[in-house]
Image 1 (cartoon, rainbow, N blue to C red):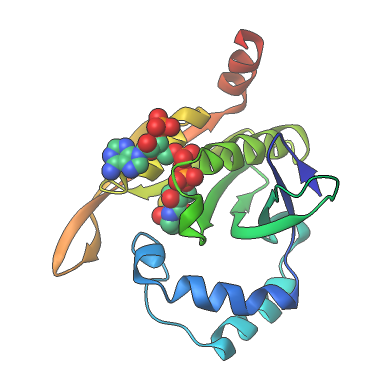
Image 2: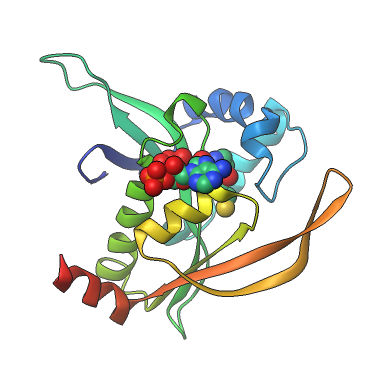
Length: 186
Ligand SMILES: CC(C)(COP(=O)(O)OP(=O)(O)OC[C@H]1O[C@@H](n2cnc3c(N)ncnc32)[C@H](O)[C@@H]1OP(=O)(O)O)[C@@H](O)C(=O)NCCC(=O)NCCS
């Protein structure tokens, strides 16, 4: 487990699959995800088996929040996040996240997950550059990543196609040196 103030990240279990199928079939949740077509339980079971074959550094984490039950340490799954395409020569990785439980949007969890992934990526995996791609019109995502310390780096023009229209995809990143400076400023 990897902990921060209100969340923890843990490895995915087979028992998570049905939640993922439910969330990833919700058009609002998958709207800005790269895999934006409907999925089945069998698709997700296949994803899970393939995921187990990935290097440990690229296996996703379930995002859990602490339930407000006095005296009991209970955690609830709300989404997933991961590093992908780690390049050990340049020590870079792409970060990805989805919060499937929509009641948890706009409560600062996305920002907190990204901050935690940055700490894990820089301090545990010894990465030097962490980047992500986000649809320009995913305003909540862009804002969350800015709050976590990601800076705007570039754009794929007409990099996505949705509802019959092209849209731009933004590239945002954080370098280890910038993240260290941010830590000192805290
Ligand atoms: C994108 C996502 C991870 C963001 O997580 P989150 O927990 O909702 O984000 P946070 O609450 O930390 O931050 C969101 C910020 O955007 C703001 N925001 C939300 N919608 C906005 C809009 N339409 N315009 C401007 N700002 C907006 C919120 O007010 C908040 O900023 P604030 O704290 O300054 O008020 C989450 O919404 C999600 O998983 N969505 C579905 C899947 C997805 O899009 N994944 C990302 C693909 S790159």
